[in-house]
Length: 511
Image (cartoon, rainbow, N blue to C red; front, side):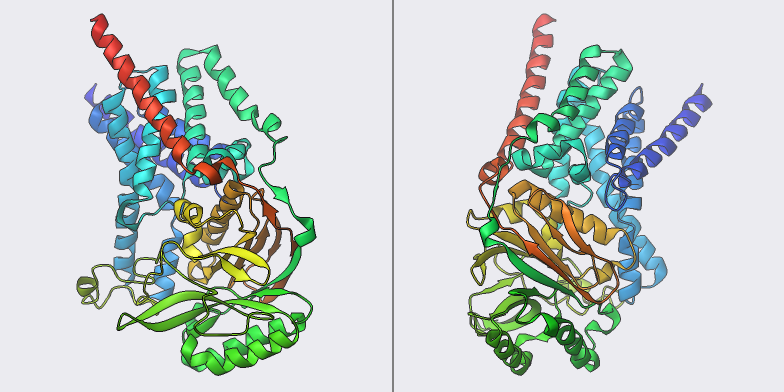
């Protein structure tokens, strides 16, 4: 009996690892959205009829499957662009994946504590609420890493209709709830459960009749997104600086005077703004003569409160916005990537010679709330790279007068992996949540135009130099999510916990 139980647990651990890995298939570029439900279904089923220790191990191993496959690209980023030995790189990735797996582990711990019995409450009420809590913690603790939230996988699925209503976390909540209904049906053959799950999945058909935004075709504008395809190995080499500027200039020149807004990606000018004053002023003159505006990424080093600060920035110039170093028409990245753009606990980690040695790991944080980025007659909400995945930050900086989003990125750090597609999928969700088109400009791809429904309408192939030209139609109006943010999700979460407390109290009274 002991051996049988032992072997069965190992079988379940193997199945939990597999079901976690299957979850990765729900995200871009695979876009098999039912895989998310299958993955959560596996976790829910496999943790049944287990001891507390066995159940928690299953939750942890499930996390290893999801994050070990879903963010394996981090190995490529570190091994290709840092001096860390391979063995240490593998250890760091395993440590990070194990840390992320702690949250599914925590989910199983709390689920076992709150509702151990097989019941409707466990699968449909308590599980979604606990999933929301643990995912919130994963997206908040230690700067947060909200990558691979299952709500993003539904950008091509029937639950996407929830995004303008309650955001990506609400989509995840709905997904876990529907999966719970399916689990309950499989275990109890409950007709109500399977009927409710089918009806919820079909809800997108009537909801499609509602539109939370209004197109403004009279304000449509052509934009050109320039993809330089600069290799990271040379981007920060000063010997290649003039060559890089020449690449962007040559790609841009045919569109000056023909396209009103031209966009270069993150750090397209890989130098301090003060060092490139001559280039910027010369290019600005050419742009203004042709009534064209350029938006570009650049590094900005300036003195603030007697301290030298370096910012990963976006600047705007040309047409009716002459270049001015002191212009307020700029954006400074707020949420920096640990070790990639800044070093936490700097005195400790800087002393470790083998640690990350990225060229931009000395940057400063811009303000959390920043003014609307003025680009001609249009109001843009800006984000740089990783910030596109930060639901709360994008929402908190959103204003009713925003015409569209702009995201400048440099996904070359990810190499030829699935990461750039996962990244742009999260930008698609930002458009869907808030009802605004997005201009997604990347150094080597994915460069794309996203409409206000979160659909990619034009995309440029990766790893080529080129220009993507498309007419973009601004939108107006506020989605329910834009108005109320994540409040509705937390109301649902607290309601679920309240229902569970009432059920516990009722059971206690009956006894």
